[in-house]
Image (cartoon, rainbow, N blue to C red):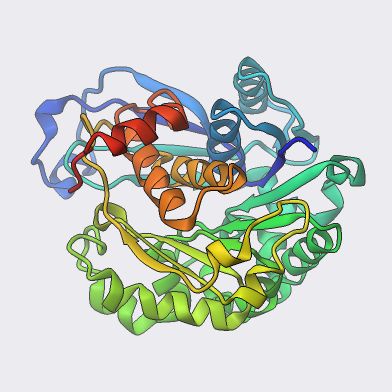
Length: 369
């Protein structure tokens, strides 16, 4: 059986102005203030969101991938279809009643990214948008960004839980990624602890970021670590991220990979009995995956142009390694390696390298940060 992956969820058009290197070191408040003109050096326009970033990265890494995302019948939607088609992919759902989601990504040199985002058609995506036919030969179902998809978090995540329960009922392994939440938005006021408790029993691989988890599960820790910049810088992963991973496993998911920015990644897996419950089509070895904990440092990037898509593409490498039968420590290492490649380009896909090349570079002593 081929390793077909379904990449479903959030998709949008990303518009990234290219700032000159001369602005590095400038305070954001001084650079982006009312009435000021800031010269840029063109713009990078590409697809964004989990479906495009993780889905197309999975395809570029040699997997058979079915995309399932919703767009509007508008100019941005046409651009999204054109870009996706250029990668040899399809499967997008066109909704005449919605507009296509877009983000303006402000990747100012020396600063973390700022996103201006319109969720658009993603808000109406539902379990019913996934046809049974697409599931017939799928081995893995990956879903991304429910915090940016209204129907997915409404009602304590009832729709999201039903969708994942449906996948597990078909013997399909499941993977879930989150997204940052605007505290002042409707999603920011949702009960994310209740949502995760409802959904995680049906999730095999949970791959969120540290910031997202802190916001959802430990607001006091989030506020303590939020210093107005990158809260993961210099983070002690075993002290700060491991307790969150343990809590997630207690909620019912089987394996957790927490992305912690420049501090690396932490992985934690459940016991043998739980790991034996991963989708039967995946044929994962539970003895290799049972009760494993580890920290994976970041690999040093050749250069850093933008962090856009780094988390999404690291997930693609992680899942590809899982499908190839790699143990969790190798899966995490390849995820970190692909993330280091991703940041060398302004978009999510141009910097990616094949898994075999990453593995060789790691074996040859790729330095970590």
